Structure formats: C-alpha cells, structure tokens
Image (cartoon, rainbow, N blue to C red):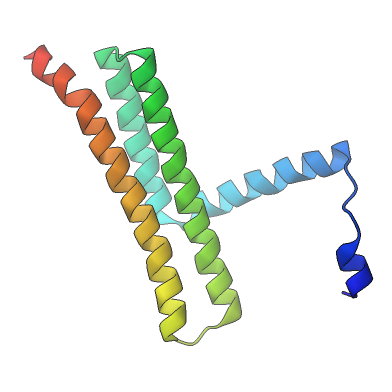
Length: 131
C-alpha cells in the first residue's frame, strides 16, 4: 500500500459501522469456537449469574460483577488476538514469541483471578447468611 493511501482518512458510513459489528461478532464466534479458556469463563459467567439471581445481590454488586466479567472477556479476546498475531509472524519457537504469548496469557489469568476474588467478596457474605 502506498503512503498516500495510508494517509487517506477513512470514510464514515452506516455500512462501515454495520461491517464493524459483523467483524466483531465473527471474532467472538472464532474465539468461542477455538479458545478453551473462553468456554471456562463462559461457564463461570453462567454460575455467577445463577448465584446473583439466587442470592438477590444488589444493583451495585451486579454492576461490579458485570464490569469484571467484561474486563475478563476483553482481556481473553486480546490474548487470542496476540496469539494469532504471533502465529502469523512466526511458526518457529522463538523466545520473544513465547514472551508475547505468555504475557497475554498472564494478563488473562490475572483478570480471571481478579474476577474470582470480586465474586468471593460479593457472594461469601450472602452464603454465610444463608446458613
């Protein structure tokens, strides 16, 4: 691509907006179809929703959980993008490729641990009060 085309401003349009949504959905479908960790987080999300409904948590607690769930999903999707990009660039086992993939995975792990801790802070008092 020449430099002039790179500098051209992208035109805004409703079709472009719809394509952005379509591509985002395709990314979600790919990730859920190919990434085991997203299925694990999906199961965790289902459990959190069921617990939240059963324990009748407050609106603010729902808001905190939804934000944490979205952060985890977003980081998992970024990790998937990092892994795909590294795989595109090189198929060989390279120390820098390993660092990129491991750090992306670590970010997803940290977000998942954060969600677990937040969930425990919210649900444990309700569970204790239940008994």
